[in-house]
Image (cartoon, rainbow, N blue to C red; front, top):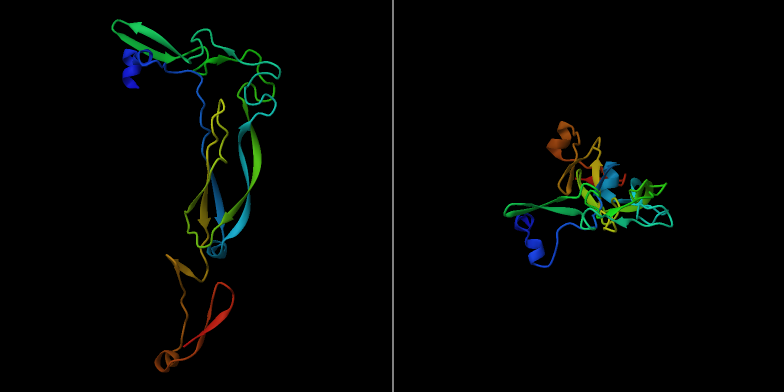
Length: 204
């Protein structure tokens, strides 16, 4: 690609750089707070995610309804223009269409020519049991919509698990401190130990 830009190998191999290329949408991040017990047992949550979606008025073209973008006359639709400087052939992004390869004369009144609008979408997400603080869940295709017909990005949900007032997690195990008296420690005893389920189990 570098040699093609500098020496013009794109034409030699029958291809040209630039043009109207589909662009992948941006990935999004959503921070979700979970209680300690919710992280332990898992749960279903509903997320309201603001994101870019394809404009329904123009179908994502950015042009006013009933019209269509026209081919850029400066770059002939390639999105790049080529300059010859001695032995070298250098390509640059077209300043007229900014690399899109098309010119929108009549812009859509809803998206103002971008082809996308910001909307809030409600997603239902299943949090698996046993997730840890800082865990990331990837939801494929639920990020920003792509440009020029490109695929959507992904949504990454970052989990922030609150600390528990009694239990301490160490990998997959739970630890807690139970006070005992000296006679109990010396002679042994049966005590009750709380669990996350709220029940108490006897411990010898």
